[in-house]
Image (cartoon, rainbow, N blue to C red):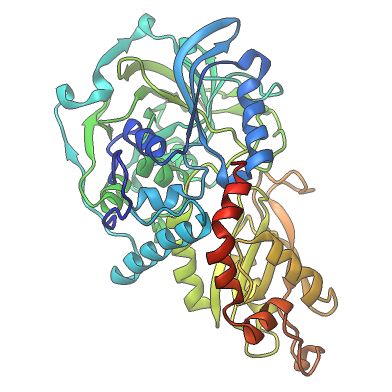
Length: 510
């Protein structure tokens, strides 16, 4: 699926077989910051993530690599990695599109438009290439095999991200499971480290992993075998963390085959040590065990959630007894700083959304749900008639549980440019009549503003130019920038040619 790599530089090119290839590619693009030692007992890694956001913005931060991390009073050899898919350029790098350091939004859109083309050529779904099973001797994730008392998860560079978190957590765990009806699945659910061989596991209600555990309980099973993969290649990671698999009617989907389709060649997989579950052969670590279903759960949390607030402590939650761990020699550990970063590339999911909205929303142009402000969605449309703005917003609010504030703008507004969106909101929107409140619908359960967990109200804002039929002016005035283009068509391009290099040098402090 990846297009030919159009950049001229050294480093791995897609498809990336491993986490290590991906980090090397980020480094080759100048997107990796390496720090020899960091004191997480003082929460310096977390502090650095917030500082990077403040200085660079969420979508322009570097990936982070810490060679050693201080945890519970001792220095732990890593590396510990973070922000690995946060920069907006990552979407273009992963799919072999042009990487423009001066215009990351252009690079992101190139990746998304490439994937829209893939969907259009495959009847609205992503293609699949089945995985191939390799011998355990060919699987880097089997270089070290630990069982029973040899296992101590606390010795690895897993961290407590926030001082208020209940414990150290594994925040990048892909949980591999198999269900007789739902088929194979892997999804990203956090794991609270409760001891050397004990993990809390946290699939939220209605996630596929939760459905599988509940189905096994309903069948009377006493436990479920489980394999948790850490240090995934970048494609497995975003599939694990986003909804790109079409599960219409809860039909089985082989997400490893989906990963092969995105990569353009089969994934190499290997059988787990204690079950028949297939896992990526090039992963950094695999944690295997059983989730008991015939006994009460264990307390879990609190944990800093994606909305940027501390979540509640759960009185009972699923847990896993660890029976085997396999990993590479000196495994690399990845942490997601939940609520403080873009956790994964979004072009594949955004492409799916765009294809759906093109069919569902007349005049659809573009859509963006910023990860740094969860709960907000922005859509642009080519508006031609009264009522189209509010109707378009309603459809987004109905489709997306996280979209609590839906802002609809005109086609001349770049949905990725927050300044333009705020400009439209301030100058084109009248709260009455161009707004509509939806009083009680499903919402994302991690939203701390909800009086009843899982239920929310929503607002649709029509920030398009209001037509005369909607109470607006007979002729809405043009913007000053549009008038510049009409009166002096070459001014902007000429200024960029004459002075763009100096602006870029000044911006970088050169």
